[in-house]
Image 1: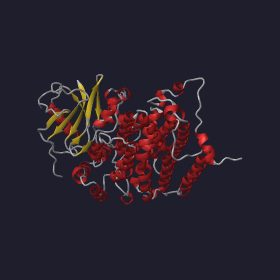
Image 2: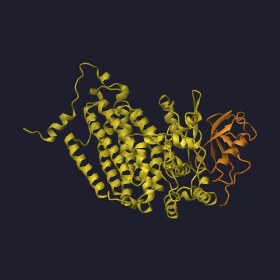
Image 3: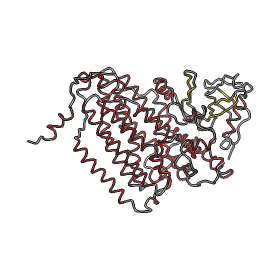
Image 4: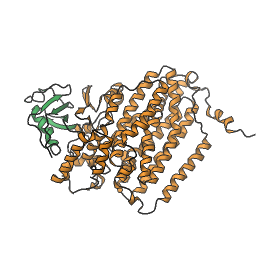
Length: 488
Length: 85
């Protein structure tokens, strides 16, 4: 007799057994499984995901999705088709590929950690599928990046970026190593599944997919949308873990992880998604501003998560809301000034783009437009050299990003002395996270720290090489003006 | 002794690393920060005010050591005059 799916799936999901040769504690050590450490019987036996998937269903579904992406890739792989893409959009894709492709691989390793050290078999099985998902999410951008090499050599940063000390890559790597690679199963379930995948990945895989569609980059759009359907499935790991934690005295810790991850996500996504959305997307493809996407697709979902578990709003919420209007615009100016340290090119905003920015961000005209005006003047009067930033930026010892002004005249940078060392932070939330876990973060050194201690070269051209930009072609330029060689 | 400080100039958009001799004056430090940003802010005031992270006004003629600034500290420079373009 053949059992129907519903008759065997529950049994197959729940294959926890009693350990005879080692204790449960040794089998699932706190360092890898997470804390509070609770026995399976008391806390984890009823762990359950809402949407269940068998392995055979998974393979069938993924096969269809994979074929769908590959079919679009084949149909659109005709020579010179990439040439029709908007030049600024190409830079957005290059930025995205370098910043995230191998970050997805870090997520695969995080899922694998839960696959071994998650506290219930249903959790481990779901994480196993999640690991397969994330491997796919690494392979797809690597494949597309490889295809795009025919139009631009710097698409090799899709794979190369994480093997360099590039300024932005150090920040993304720090983020993924903290949240994914150097975390235990419980922390990963909250950080990766509960916060990042139920909220922030909407920016990457829904908002950006919609923009890619309107930018006529249908392979990229199809790949992003396909990835999002995976995320929606394995993101559900987070909820039952949070539920168990709250039920067994872990509410305060869960709140900390939630606050910490929200802030870290906000920092990394404003740099890697906010700036390209508002400055590299063709006007016709801008369905919403970064701020609007954040409000509608990320904040709303986050609020629902908070309400479901009666979590408090993060203490820095007002600062976050204020930054929505400013922080990524300041960072874009920083990126433009340091463009030789990037693997993609950046434009100054055109008249049409300026009008769009003024419309979407009413304070932009007063705060940022005069600075772009002066950059344009500098180009006209003195040439490219006057538009580059030659001082190093102050880098935050937590998020690793440039310490920018987050409003007109509003500088949130702060410092901390600890064990004879001085640390710089872009904001109070970054310092707060550091102070919660000084042993975890205290020994890491920013690029600036490395220059100061002599580990990295202080000469700017040597520093570019140290960051992986070993040829002039590998360094970012003004997108529309290109470069007048040599740059002083 | 050369030290590095993090300077934030009024009207600028990011903090900059400034390497400076600790025997330098506070005013000299402000001028140095303004000079690095001169292409974007061509008309700095001759009498900028400098504060430390806590907002304490620093005496322009003091050396950095005397003013209490040491490696890795934050300082703010205000009093910039933006030129009309």
